[in-house]
Image (cartoon, rainbow, N blue to C red):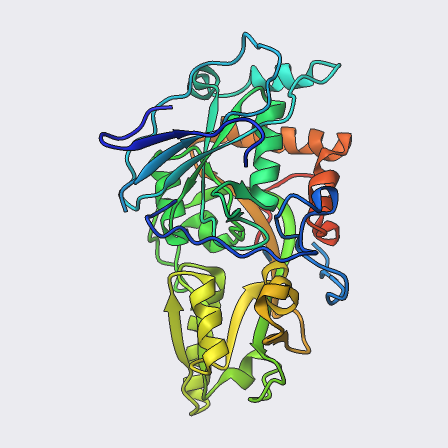
Length: 379
């Protein structure tokens, strides 16, 4: 894997487990390891005692170092090819590699699907995947810098089934779609909610602002409101946020939702102040110190923030768990239909062979499972 000039190259040794020079890692508390790896020091999505997950019917810097993963030894494959160098990203990021699962099923369907990949991806042997690794438990880094969570695990499984290797590029969330559209990465997997506006590249007024993207939907989530324990401001729905300050992560569906709510609150004569911050931890800190009365998260993240031991019991969900639902989607260029369709068919295979269910079970988020891959199913 190529590195930018002057980059330091670090090779991880088998069985050992930065974005920027200040990598956002999360402390891991006992009891929060995935079900299958309690001793592996990575947090699971929903510990015992978390609110029941009940979804509506079918979410809603220049590179400083390059990391290579040395995965456990696998049988040699003639299909594998050296990875291509990643173009330097204007938004910057951290290149990380994940280990794919064994891709060759007995019926040969993995090889057949690989044959339908774009020639450039097939020749490279790599899927370059953008993700903002600061969103526990969906996308994050372990204390030693490894990508972890629902998206990295599922991406590894998809890539492995196709005889590819997954490389993760850590970049700010709002830079993901532009990076996909400009071909700096092959796709994004970062709890990106599939919406009609993102598909068409339009704003709230229907004006075209970018080329749009396609999605392969793989998980159903929803947006929840997080407040300080005790809910001192009595928040229970969107309109109850009027007259207050709300903190969200920049570039998310929640930011867009609160932008619309700001207009609604102004009509009620109770202005809403919106603080759009770089990451979810910053937004949560504002809720914790009283600068904001609430923050909005995807439901899996909201549950982590309100139940994880390292959060210290400082936050709770409002009574109404969902204010909007929608699917997470693998994000691809509009003209990359070949890769899109292969990934959709591969996801269907992982659903059928049980791999998909194992990934969701590991992170305790099976209620958000989809029964099949759907292209552009968001509204």
